Image (cartoon, rainbow, N blue to C red; front, side, top):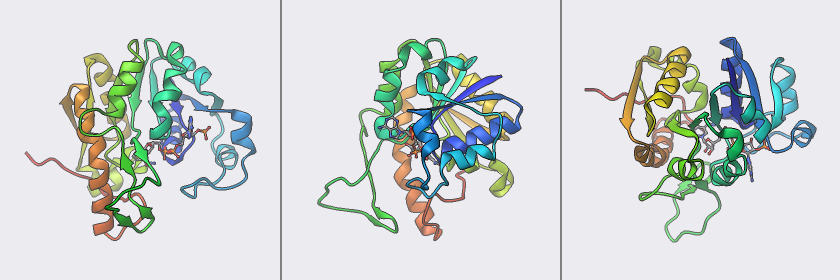
Length: 239
Ligand SMILES: NC(=O)c1ccc[n+]([C@@H]2O[C@H](COP(=O)([O-])OP(=O)(O)OC[C@H]3O[C@@H](n4cnc5c(N)ncnc54)[C@H](OP(=O)(O)O)[C@@H]3O)[C@@H](O)[C@H]2O)c1
């Protein structure tokens, strides 16, 4: 299948590598391919420059966001930085018509002013915006009415999302939410191909609020486990 990953960060790379391994034709979206390939410094998270990573992953086609989205048969994964994702996706709405967009972005605002900061090993905890009464996934769905948005993957580091068996033999839970049953089925099939066995459909896209707000809890658990960045663990819904 032709599958597109929008994003060149650590999460996008994890999905791209796994999709290649599964035999898919993978298109990756970036703002400006030339500029992305010209980078020589690691990114904010310490990932090596994208060109270096790409050289080790032959077969990937790097394109501007819109062209990459248009190249997908059906599935597009959104790994664009959460604060900029809605605007970036709205700008390529026409290329996403009729596609299933699986969104894993967290709408974090970094370096915000707050009276009550939460100090973490890597700085003050970012602020979620939107939060409580809206979510990034809903904002994206409103901006792209002809695209079927599914929120998923977001409650976990993406290296674990693409390799669930690396934690507890895979005995943990992944969530999906969205307003389109066929799109959730497509996302669920992809998750099964990644190795997930416990996939919980939370219902409509409004439930993305819960998934996005879980981001702070994910960090808190990681700190409790003595893991500073990301975290390598899963959550299981015991019923
Ligand atoms: N990494 C994980 O395991 C993980 C886990 C859960 C949730 N998340 C969330 O998922 C999202 C993506 O995370 P990530 O780590 O994969 O990547 P990331 O480093 O957060 O984002 C990288 C992507 O965002 C794009 N971008 C940055 N600023 C932009 C702007 N102003 N306009 C348009 N695009 C812009 C970059 O474009 P260029 O390619 O042009 O540089 C790049 O493709 C984030 O919201 C993150 O919080 C990540």
